[in-house]
Length: 217
Ligand code: AMP
Image (cartoon, rainbow, N blue to C red; front, side, top):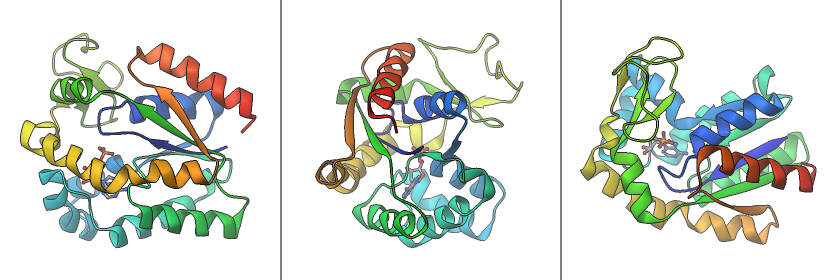
């Protein structure tokens, strides 16, 4: 199973990618999480990526592409993967197609999770995340049992710098200008399936399972 999750920031890609990966035993590859880890560890990549991320801009293709190429080559991706947050530009999508066609038969499916702009902004401003395991919370709809402490690993829950209002605006602009064109790119390849992301987490996941089952990806 080789999947790509598409959707605007706050659409629920990360939450659903995690559920898919657990249910179908494939690797969950989040480029956002990988980049945040690089920033935290102050690696060469992290130092270069930080300013872009803090402002809500996309990190340059070259940096992200080589990071993903290295990741997809690892053993734990041989059984399949769910890509969350990659590709985000047509150039990234083209490299991914080339790469997968060379090693195997290519992507199985692209799931586009659709959510209205109003709901995206509400979700992002109230989103919180565990610094240690990456688990996502929402102040109103899905808070942790103890404020500021992750239910799963006890890590610190924080607000991402890029979930603050000015960065959210920039991220949505970047999504519209650079990532949205991927919808028609994958539609033309016959890989795109649209999922209603306005529903609750469980219902979105049920829809995804139905679509995956029907297509036997
Ligand atoms: P995310 O956690 O997926 O919302 O990603 C957080 C930030 O990481 C984005 O706003 C970008 O700055 C950067 N990023 C993640 N994935 C990519 C990508 N595929 N291409 C460029 N930048 C990315």
